[in-house]
Structures are given as structure tokens and as C-alpha cells.
Length: 550
Image (cartoon, rainbow, N blue to C red; front, side):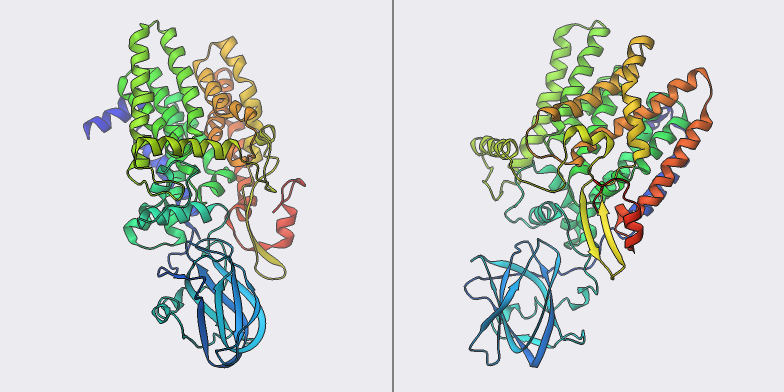
């Protein structure tokens, strides 16, 4: 405990007031971020429906089926739905569409029948967790399963989980169909579907699923949301160490708190939250090392760098910035070259490798390959590189790197009509009150570096450029979320701007006015990034640009 106390009081300069203020910020954001994060109740018993056999459902009495609801497991896809009056002669009625893993789907049709048969369309086995039929009056139809009798219980034992309305709250959306599925597979020792990124992020995502044994939307979004909260804490600590005064720590933390993009991205059940948290921590401890010259901070920087690349290779871009800062700092302090190189190799090559490699070897059962040897591990890295370098897919919400700073094309993650006049939507709208001034805050950094010999500005510029410039040379499709790792350093750059102008003349009022505008934007766009039910008129009126599609 004394070491922890010394860490905060001696160097971080945190005190009780800091703890109180930070606790208030974290509680506010934490409560807001957990509201409607996801259901804690969904089907958890699944069975594979074989393509050769299918499954037959018998109605207690002949009725008109108007709607069918079903919950997809890890293997999802389309079904041929056939009907029969006698249980012998079936006629295909239509194709029942399955849209992804761990989500509720429904099909609407109008057919009077006694039996229905579901057969996977593409000659593969598909997984169902629950199924329910409804008549024209919206009443649930009593059924029994006459084939695959071992599945009777599994497809009707969790009727209480069937939602009245299907939404993001009870179903996966966007890339959750890949990452959440893989987290479930890691937690249950199954062959893992998502292999194009290193395992660590999905392993972290799997922790609540493994602990509780429940595969729910709340559980697979939980760790990413916690990471989003931890980022705010790290931002406060970073700003306190960088600018010394509490007002700048609060300011920087609030910028992250009220960035609508941060809110939308960290509530999504993917792995980018972990990536950005670890990148932040790697730079934070590098800053502390440059400031205090203590080896433990360099070791921690290397540790979190290793964790970042074990989530996504984008972490390697952080390594570029960390290396530049490390060597510039050492040359400035005229340290001997060999010890500098030795520490660099130990903390930024050896330690990251000791994290990265075991993350594959400990859980080797990937769908692409079994990474249980050095040779297969190397082969997997080649496959990952070939996938990302050769990706030619198309997507309506891709964007060019030069459009990211202005948030030209947010990613439309989710939409659902609730009534004829209301809907839910989730889009990665950036808080332009933060993003646009951040461009100026970055452009002025060279002035502070050259004219004022300001080391903080150099640190921030290197971090920002190392995480952004490499995307200029990447040819594959990209999205606005690739800009996510840059954002924490933009918040610090804006804070640095106010810090610099306040040196000569106190303009705290300007900071307050600016933060007021930031908060107003967040309030207005909160429904757009949270999936809150709103009127379609409200949604349309918030579209500031034609490229903001949601």
C-alpha cells in the first residue's frame, strides 16, 4: 500500500480532491454507459440442426402462421421453410433468413399449416437456441417437435427470453457477430471463428462469459465498456502528470467522457476498446519514464505495448512512436548507446513477444489453423498479413484517412424501426466540437516545439503522427474506427492548447464555455450513439451533413 501511495503522491501528485473529482466523473460516465448496454437474459442452450435431417415442428392444431422468431447460435444462416398438412408431403414456402451469430431473427409470412420443416439452405449445420411461432392475432402457437426429439427441450426451454421487440439490446450488431462469437468459442473451448486478429482482445471479451457461463449481450459488451471507463481514468492521470493542475486533468477527462464517438465505440462488443486502452497506457508510462527516468515505467510501457499488439496489429504503430520518443529522450540526455539499445530490445521486443506468442499457443484451436507449434504460428501470421493486405471487400461506410479528422463519414452500426414514426439508431458520430478544434490544436504543436522548446508538445505530436500517418500508405478499405487510437492524444493536444494560452493570460472562462458546447453536443447526439428510441424527425434534424447517414 505504501508503494501505491508513493506512486500517486510523490510523482503523480494526486490527492484526495483528485480522487473525489475522478470518482464523480467515472460514476457519471459509468452509470450512463451501462444504461441499456445489453440484456442479461438470452437463450444459452443450443443445438446444431443438421442439413440432411432438418427439424420438424408440429402445431398442436392447424393454424395460420404469421411470424416466426428464432435465436441464432454460433452457426447462423438461411433455412428452407417447408409446410405440410399431413407430416409427409412438404412444400417449400419460403427462405427464412438468418443474419448473424447470437441475434434474434424473425420471418413474416401467412400460411395455414399443421407442420413446418426447417432445413439449412447451404448444406451445413446451423445452430438454434430458441424458436417460436405466432398466429395472425400475435398469439404464440403451441407446438411440439416430432423429429430430433432431443432438441425439444433446448428449443423451447427459454421462452421467457423471447423479446417483444428485437433490437441491439438483445441481439448482436455490426462486427459483434464475429468478435462476440469468437469470445463465446474461447470461453467454451470450441474452434474459434475470428482469426484475422491476435487472440488477446477476444480472450478479454470472453472473461464474463467464462465466469458466468452465460452468453448474453451484456456479458460480451461488458469488458469493452469497462475499458472505456478505464480510459477516462488513464486520461485524468495522464493530464495530471503532463500539466500538473487539476483543472487540466478534469478538462481532458471530460473531453473523453463527452466524445460521442468514444461512447458509441466502447459500448460495441468488439476489441478496439482494449487496443486503445493499452496504447494509452504504453504512452502514459513512456511519458513517466521520460520525466522520471525510472526503469519500472519503461518496463510498464513495453508491457502495455505488448498487450496492444496482442489485440490488433495497429498496436505496432504505437511502437513506432514509442521508439522515436525513447531514443530522442536518450540522445537528449546523452546516455550511452548500448544500455539504451539493450533496454529497448528487452522491454519492446522480448516482453511483447512473451505476451504475443503465448496468446496463440495457449488457445490454438482457430478455424483457420491450429497454432500449436512455431511453424503453424508463423503460418498464421502470414495468413493474417495476406488477409489484411489483400482485403478488397466493399462497404458503404468505408472512409479515406484524410476524412477522419473531420469525421466526414461515421459508421452506421445499427438501425431498427420501432413504429412508423420512431426508430433506434447507433452511429459513430464524432463530437465535432472536439474533433474540429483538435485539428488546430495539432497544427500549432510544431510552433510550441520550435519556438517554446516544449517537450510535451513534441511527445504529443510524435504519438499522433505515429498512429495516423501510416494509414496514408495502406490500400485496403478502412473505417473511422481506425482513427480511434489517435483520439486520446487529440484530447491532450486540446488541453495543451489551453495550458499554453493560460500561461500568459488566465482564460479559464474560455475553457468553461468550450466545455459547455462539448456537453451540449453530447446531449443532442446521445440518442444517436446510444440506440435510444427517438422520432424519425429528430433523427433527420441531427444530420448536419449528407455524409452523416443513419
